[in-house]
Every structure is written in structure tokens, then in C-alpha cells.
Length: 112
Length: 115
Image (cartoon, rainbow over all chains, first blue to last red; front, side, top):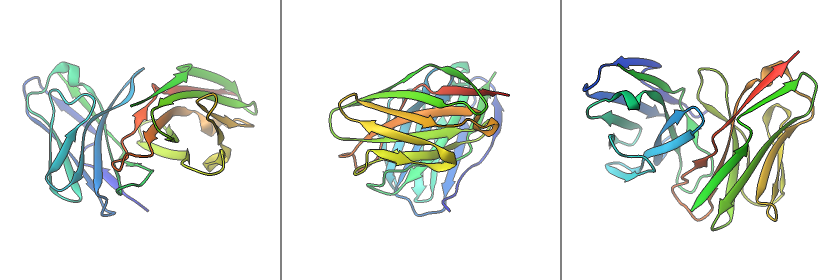
């Protein structure tokens, strides 16, 4: 079974802090994705990566950056957290040309 | 470009009754279509998908969906609801020409099952 893990289930940070969310997959998938989930808005794509050190912006990249130094690990970075970044963050992975994304359990981030 | 519309943000069904969740999409090329389910405090789990071939697809937990190109729809059904079906359901679309497999999600439908 594909396993996607996220470093924290719940995280509380203060405005202005730098926040790192980590995602690791164990199936040698090329593509990895970061989404945020908000009530009534579904999931929105923040960034994705199709290879080590390669990244592309999604629909809502403002205020975020990403890092992919190893194939299995994809990090989402909030350079200076703001209250409007309070949300559920979900990581997913898939192989190239594959049709199914596999999701991690999510990190619920609260920015105070 | 692609987009997804899910009709109804909340649906309440009685245990044993039909579950029907509606999804309409728009896509500039042949789409891949998905239904995912999210149980409380969990990530998303794939229920079923349509890529090519048979337009009626069966998934896990007794769910099925039918791809209707003429109606640009991919509605999800289950003949008899169970209490364990209470969850949030997301319809999603990707472009068959997209090697990265980017998904566009609907806003989600929360399903409540009453005894």
C-alpha cells in the first residue's frame, strides 16, 4: 500500500513565524502536491513538484514556498505565517501519467 | 482548463435510503473523473474513478458513478445508505493530457446519515 505521511496532525503557530510542513511518501512517486482545504472551497492546489528540485505553482501559491531536495520528501514553507493561512493542509503523491493521487492524513494548522 | 461543480454542500439521508451526490464538470479535453471520501480527521481516500472505457464505474463500499459526456456529469450513487457513509465527498477532474495529473476539486458535499 502507498503510504503518505505528514509530520504533524495539529500545529499551532504565531503570526510572523516561519512554518515548515513536511510530507514523505514511500512509493517512489515522481509527482507530489500540496493542497489547502477550507470549508465550502474544497481543496485548492498550492504547489506541486514533478521531480527533485522541480516545482510549479498551483492555483494559490501566494504566501507559500516549497522544497524538494529528495524524491520522497516535499516540504511546504510559510515564510511568515498569517492568520488567513489557518487551514487544513493535505499532501498527495502520484506517479507520472498516473490517474490516482494518494493523500496523507493532513495537518491542521492554526495561526494565532 | 477544467472545473467541477458539486450540487449541495450538505445532504441528509436516512439509513437504507438511496445516496445521490451530484457532480458536473467542464473540461477542454477528455477528462479523468474521481470521487474521493474524507472521514473526520482523515485524509482523502479514493472511492472510484473514470479514465476510459466503461462509463459506469464501481468503487469501494458499494458506491458507483456514471460518466455522461452529453450531460458533463459524474454523479455518485449508493442504493442503501449505511451509518458509516457519513463523511465528506469530493468530486475531482483532471485532464487526460496532463502528465502531472493535477486535480481540480469541487467544494465538497457533507453527507449525514440519520437512523
